Length: 270
Length: 163
Image (cartoon, rainbow over all chains, first blue to last red; front, top):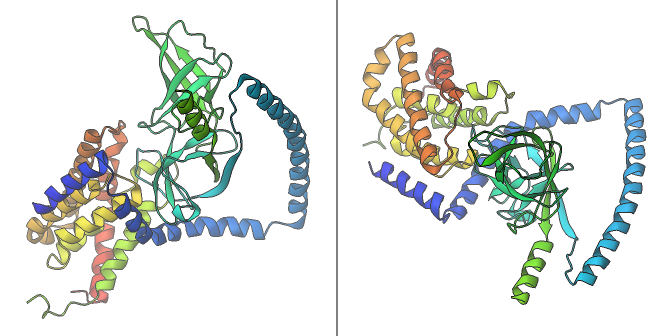
């Protein structure tokens, strides 16, 4: 009976206030070896694949990667020019945004979390400076945010989790909306868009930076389907996420500065 | 009194539980994922049934907390559910022991369903209720796997003389 009472109290405290972060992160260190052990066979498989690749394969891959790098470099040149131009224009407008962001690569642990929630475990924790609420992206787009941190690992809440929402805007016309997770791997929903909103299938959705958590301008997804239900004021807009939520093995952790600076700027203005 | 009885083979219990945790965290393909048996609950039911004086509600509760941490769930979700399962098992272990395996498996299915139901309630209260019917599948797979688990753990227990 006492334990039931304690459980209920602990659940309420954890859900409402989160005073138990310290306990959780301490206990996580205890569980971490198990997770590493589970991850080990997967890791070993990858290692074998790498070490027994033939020389020719490696050469071919090298060739391909070099080609890709050239391509990306040439794109990057253009991007840098654009960034500089953008900064200049913004300076003229009187609102500077620092685009520089600190980035760290983390690897996913092949570990299952709670079923019917969209959580993944990564191998970076407070030792590397990861903090709760930090934004996680991959090469294609936004993945989610940090949910729990512990010294050696942390849990990422994916954008497809039913309890997750990202403030977004449509890249084409700047229309703002909120992308809510559905619990399915391949769909988000845009909430509260009126039926006559200017949206088309294939529109790119990027993070709007309004919630001050996700930095501006990271791709979130593309509009996959728009259904108008007669009788309802809002259109049902589903978005397919651009990040490879099911496939990516390496993710990037961001330490954005722009949000803070923008924040302090607006504070000053006020 | 408890100290005077010679307990041994505690490491077997710990090891079996560690393996259960590992099986819970083991990645499975997308479709099969929902069918994962409730390993920790099953192993716990076994030990509560076989050695009710050693593995009790307190241990179950602590295991539940660890499971919550491992799975990133709300603190206390699995702890409450596992503690209640342990309580029911300890209340009924004398009957459970003499049941034939099939009947035991059906009872275990019911227990795992109670466990799932508690988890479902808690999730519903927090606001993320799982929608799919596959949520109940672990109870069925646990039932199917129970006889094997029971035999393996019983043989292990006898071999290493865990009392």
